[in-house]
Each structure stands twice: as structure tokens, then as C-alpha cells.
Image 1: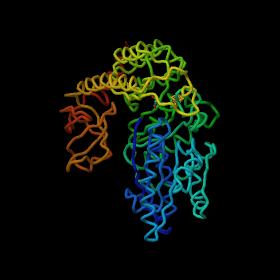
Image 2 (image 1 turned 45 degrees about the vertical axis):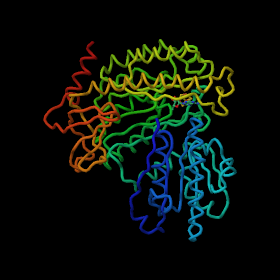
Image 3 (image 1 turned 60 degrees about the horizontal axis):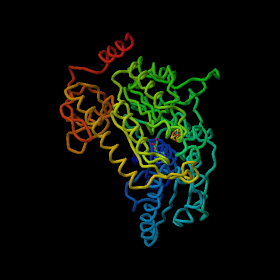
Image 4 (image 1 turned 180 degrees about the vertical axis):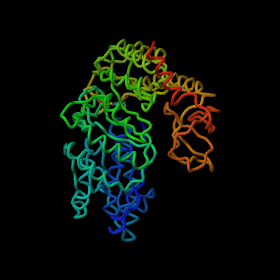
Length: 485
Ligand code: 5AD
Ligand code: SF4
């Protein structure tokens, strides 16, 4: 889930009347932070802010941070060191620069941040973004502002209002947060502490936001949640829906051609959600379903609440419903107490499942989590060796999966210009990047593309308007075949 993206704010009427200021937003960590940064831009646009990618030009700097592993959290402090120099240089020419730290480091460390980095003017956690204008006003009085309250319902309500008058230029593929927080308390993870308890947005809020997105040119929506498949939102009659039912409802929205969701927990994969993969051609054949470890002993110590066998059975059910699905995963190596045999169990699980892609990490002790104080911490060199071995296996599986697409014609959503002139980049149904020569006017459309070459990080394709192998009716045919079996 590593992701960094700067977003763009376009001028609207409100911006033209408000004083012109520039915001430099840097986003670390997961897609939820990318979505949150977009919402902060929605809030800042009417305040006269437009985005800049040059730190030197910024009147306001916001670092939207990630606390998931120590490395991610430490990045913030090294970036603040760089920002301090620029802030001092701007001050010499009489220009101000306000510095804010948002996101999960802000939530976890609070005022400790401005103690460690005195250039920071405001620290605010993920549930405070709708109050940003007020917090900025307070910070302008010279007061150090720290806001780490949990009031998630208020956040969603207010951010929905802002998103209702969009000032953002929407890319063809966008994120939509449906659920935030986590009640699972895996023993390695800070999320239940930084994002708080699980909260689901209502059906109406989500449907309205998705409709607005579709109306502004979004073709693909990825539903986000730390535990997205635990989403259980209420409809207008007070009935509780699960994520599967929501996918059926969102599939009815005109112009929304593709739906994805992330990140899922194996325990919350219910029949309706699996059936949505079988029945709906809008639901893309890709699933990120972290297992973290293949050892029953480690799964129990991690408090994952399922066994490796249960995971295998789940994978079988999913593949029976959607045979062409690409599976993705997260793994942690070197969790406290992990022996060579436990690690071998993880390698065996990977060999059996065969992933399209996977992310893997060395266990990182996070303050306040149960794992941090467990005995039997694994030495760093052992973690490194295991990680290298695991990543080699996953790389081979990714390569094989990508190679299996060669010669196939599939739907590609063309998202943006590529590095070379005349080139566009899009995404296959299986979330692979596809590069091809195509005119710019096709950005935002879905095209039949023949995969002609496999690169190390992306596929290369050729427009193939006349022919479809794996989309539309032929993809339905595959799903029907699976259903019959
Ligand atoms: N150490 C290493 N990896 C972690 N993750 C979460 N917490 C930790 C930690 N303490 C990984 C998990 C999770 C992904 C987002 O980050 O694999 O699925
Ligand atoms: Fe963290 Fe586990 Fe919740 Fe995922 S399910 S956010 S890993 S506590």
C-alpha cells in the first residue's frame, strides 16, 4: 500500500475572490491518506489556496503522515529538517510559511512533534480535516495548535459538504473512503490507535459521493477502508448493508464502469461480497487480501483470528466465483517468535496461493502495540534475509502472472500521459500499469488493448478497437462458466 501522490486544485469562483496562496501537500502511506489529502484540498480551495509542487513557493506546507512502520514515521522528521531551511530562507525575504503535520504521526505523537521540530505550527489528526480553516486561523495568531480529537462522524459529514461543491479536477480513477478505523487489534498494528474504532459511512453518503464523482468524469472508484470489507452502513430505512450489497448498488450508477475496494480482512469476506465478484462486471478481478503470515502459531500471536487452512478455503471460494482474479497480499516477516519453520510456512502458503503481487515488510516495533513488548524479538539480519527470500519468490510469481497476459486483449482505463510523447498510461482489470501509444483525447476512456510486451514494472499494449478477449461479454462468459461449475 505504499503510495505518494500530490493532488491538484483548480481555480473556481471562490478562489478568484479569496487571496491567492499556495499549498504544498505531501502525502505518505496508504491510499486513505491520498483520499484525505484530496479532501483537504477541497477544503482549502475556497480559502484561496492552489496546489504547488515547489516547496519554495508554499505559503502553507502540509505533511500528511503515516505511522505504520518506524521508517515511515521517521521520514516526517527528515522532511521537516528540509522544510526548516526553506522556511528560514523565505523569512529572509519577508515571506511567511505555515507548516502543518497531519495524519497518523500527528494523531500518535501530538505535541511531541512541535517539541521535536519547532518549525511546526499545527498538528492535526485524521479526524480534524474539516476544521482546517479554523485551525489555520488559530495558528496564524502565533499559537501552536494541536488537534487530535476523534470525531469521525463530524468529519465525514463536513467533508461530504465540501466535496459537494468540488474544486478538484478529478482523475479518471479516484478513491472514496467508506469506512475508517479498525476494531481488530492485530498485535503489530497502530491503526486501531491512530484511526480509532471502526466507523462506516451511510449508504446515502457513499452513493451521493460516487454519483458526483461519476458526473465529474470518474470512471473507476476504489472504496477505501482500513478494514473495508467490515463496512456495514445504514440505508435510508435504517437497515444495515454489507459491502457486497453496496457494490451491487454502486454498479447501477451511470458512467461508473469499474469498482475496486481495499484493504480487506480474511475474516470479513462474506458470501455476498464473493458473489459480487462473480456477478458484476464492474467489480474488477483483483483482491488485496492480506494474510501477514502462513504460520498458525504466528497468526494466533498476531491476533488475526483465523488459521492458514481457513485462509486456503477462503481463497478457493473466491477463485471458484472469479477464476480470473488476481490476488494480492501483505506479509510481515520477523514477527516476535517467528522461527525458521514459521517462515517456511509463510513461503509454503505463497507457493500454494500464487499471488499476482504482494507487499512485504520487516516487522517494526510500534510503541503502544502488544507486539512491541513481546519476548523473542527477531534479530534485524534474520528479518532482512527472510524478507529478501520472500520478495524473490513473490517477484517470480508477479513475473509469471504478468507474462500470462501476453497476447491477451483486455480493457484498459487510460488515466494519464506517459513519460514519452504520444504515450498514455492506464490500468488493466488486474491493476497492472499498461503503457501504450494513444491520443490524449482518450484519457478517461476504457479501451480494448492488446498486451504486446511485458516490462519489469508495467505491461506494454497496443490499441485494439475491434477485438476483446477478456472484458464485456466474454468476461461475463468466464464468470458464468465458473458459476455453473
Ligand atoms: N511492522 C511491519 N509491517 C506492518 N504492517 C502493519 N504494521 C506493521 C508493523 N508494525 C504492514 C501489514 C499491513 C500493511 C499495511 O503494513 O502488512 O497489512
Ligand atoms: Fe491493523 Fe489488523 Fe486493523 Fe488491518 S485489521 S488495520 S492490520 S489492526
